[in-house]
Image (tube, rainbow, N blue to C red; front, side, top):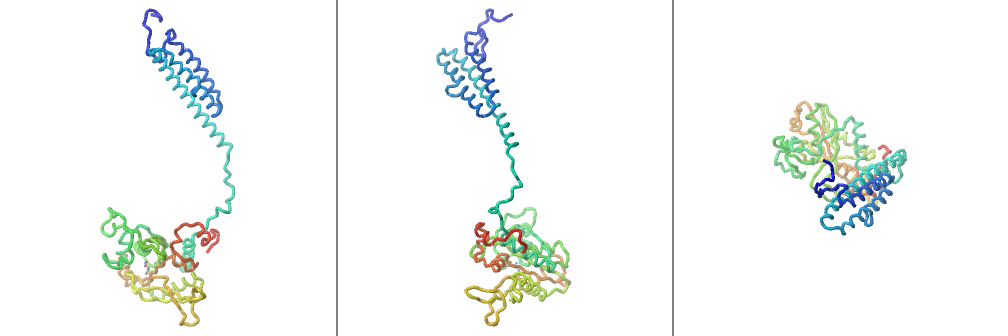
Length: 384
Ligand code: PHE
């Protein structure tokens, strides 16, 4: 059975049969499709392709013109022709899109191969960074204590109560804990009691404990790093840096402590006969405990570190806390206090830096003001 007999015309087809009376537009569509496809394939750059798009789908474009001719048709015919035209329009849009992404890729490829980045270009002077004074001081401290046989130990900023307080002989609820008011975090559910109570360390003394727990004497370490307390004024920031020192050996005594700190202070402040004195003080983890002062004199409107010619003019300022490691602390770390003794000391790195370089306000250290850094920073290639 061939076509054309006495079958009723098939309607509702997107592409009606060629002998249907409604197929005038279809012929146009077929012709236009091969014409536009040819133009799209011939467009060799994105600009040419866009011109083809406007000529086809734009307000006065060829496809749009065909759409307009629908208006003159009767409703039945318009429905069929309209469907066919919409399919056609979508097809053209699709072909345009495919060509467009191909041309975009071609465009990118040719730019990648023609535009090169010269990584050998030397840095411009204005981009030169400087070393932050805190980092500089840490390098100096490493150098000075390194020469005295101390190595550098590290510990976490997020500590547990045991390492920050209890093992350092701050019993739970002891008022000395209040001198170091800190930021508590969520408890660690995997650990019991004070080992699961998490906080930001209030001092670097926690690293003493960590080091003694995992090493056997003789020990000689410093630890430097961030510490946290809930304070904020001209001389306190909630985050600051400390250095901690620990020496544990047989027959260690207060004289070793004072000798070590005197040598350190003279080297750090570059004052040969810098005087030092120890005043009794309380820290739960040392016995005896001391606050350590260095001497200065008033000069002009300011101060000068050093020994006064006339003892009556000698002034003192506190720079460190120190003492002999408390026997309870040694025991907490399984070290026998009858066999070993130790000394420990701690200081604020900002304070040491402010004194050495005459920086007046602690808060400026952490404001990231590029002018401050340019003024107080250190050349990255200059060694302390
Ligand atoms: N950890 C003490 C503080 O932060 C300082 C210190 C360290 C005192 C070591 C004695 C011994 O205040």
